[in-house]
Length: 187
Image 1 (cartoon, rainbow, N blue to C red):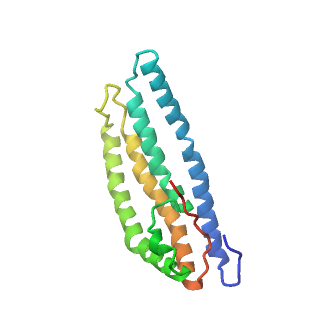
Image 2 (cartoon, rainbow, N blue to C red):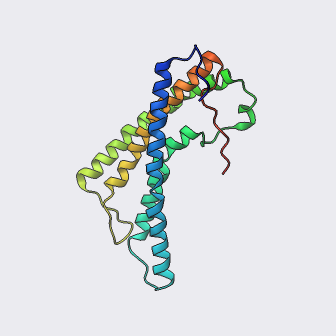
Image 3 (tube, rainbow, N blue to C red):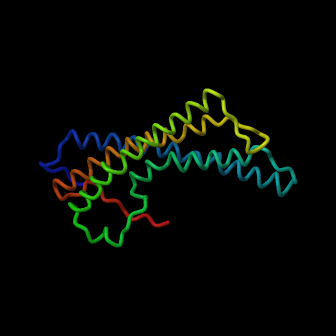
């Protein structure tokens, strides 16, 4: 974050610090999903190609773990600036213009879309939980409601981080100062 000046509200800085800290901690915890994902894939490859004994659970485990890692990591990616942006124009904009574009985008697109997705995905999860839905993709037939819970949880995490990002963008519009510079993430 930038140096604290007279114009910065200590309460807003505290909110940003709390939310960003929460996102950093949850991002770290969520990143550990990569360990069972790698172990499941390694086990399946070993069982399949060395012992000619493929598992019935590996496909379900890997898509559920990878999907969870991807979805739940979205808030951390938002915090770190890892989402796609059109840098061709963006780099030429002033800090105030960047803040204005981000503020409008969060209010008009981000929050309404995520709230709708949260409501719809919550209903999907709740129904799946009520009927104890099971996958019919493989003979293992795992229960699906924990996996379906990932989507509303990811929406909630994104909404929380979105509040921090909105405050930062409003601050950019008001002051012309960037509280947190997002580095370009190359993939």
